[in-house]
Image (tube, rainbow, N blue to C red; front, side, top):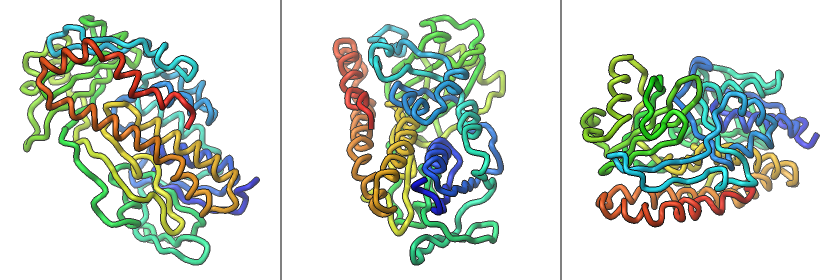
Length: 375
C-alpha cells in the first residue's frame, strides 16, 4: 500500500476528520484521531446533504449506511414570511445523475462515520494539540494531556475555530458574516401548513430566515437566523409576524425545553492551507455561511480528493500542493455564492421577493451547476 509506514494524526473527530481518517487508512497510513470533546456525544442538530455531498459517502463506502438513517428530500420550497410561495425546486431533477438529497440528524451521520473507521484507527477523546513543531521529515506534536509524539503528516480537521490553524498560521482567518443562527430538533406534531413534515421549507422575512427540514420519525430540524445583536434577539421577537408553522414550532420549543445550538455565523479565508507537514481541511480551511448547505459536502470532497492526490503523488509535499491547487477553485466558488446569497438579506423584501418569484429556480440551478461535476 502506498501509505505504508506513514504516520498521520487527524485532529478533530467531526465529519471532515473522520472522513479524512478513513481515506488515509485505506491509503495505507497508520492513523490516529484526537478530539477535544469528551466523547462521541450528539453534536449539533440536523444536517442537509445535497446531491454532491451524498455522492461522497458512496465513494467512501458509507452510502448505504447514510441512506438507512436519512430522509430523501425531493423538493425545496421557498416562501415569504407570510407563507406565500416564491418558488420551489425539484431537487431530484437538480441533482439528476449525481445523487439524491438527504436529511438526517448530525448524531446519526456521526455514528455512521465512526462505525466506518477501521478497528485499528484509535480515537482519543478529550485530547488536543498544544504545540506543533516541524522536525526533519515530519511534525512533533505536544498534546494537552501531557503526552507527545511525532507524525509524518498532521491533518487539522477541527472546525472553524481550529486549534491547529491557530498554531500553524497567523490569526485573522475567521470572519463574521453578520448573522446569528439557532439550530434545534423538535417534534413535528400535527403541523401541516406548507407540508413542512415532508418538504424542505424556507420562510424569508426582513433580514431573517426560518428553515424546516424533515428528519423522519416525526422530527423536524429547524434552522433560523437573523442579524447579530447583543444580546441576541429573542426568537419570538425575531420571527414575530411569521405565518404558521413558525409560531407553533416556537411555542413547542419554549414548552419542551429543547436544546438550542446558537452562535454567530463565520467564514474562514486563508492564503494557504498547508505548512511544514500540516494540512487544514473542511471548515478549518474554508468555512462558509451555511446558506448553500455545502459545508459537509466540501469536507467529504476534501477527504476523497486528498486520498486521490496521495495515491498519485511522488511524496507528501507534492500531494498537499496538488490537493490545495485542485480544491481552491471549488471551495472559492462556494464562498462566492454564499456571499451573494447573504447580500440579499439587505435587499428590501418587496424587491427580493419579486426577483425570487421570477428568477429563484434559475438562480438555484446557477449556484449549483459547477458542483454537479466531480471534485
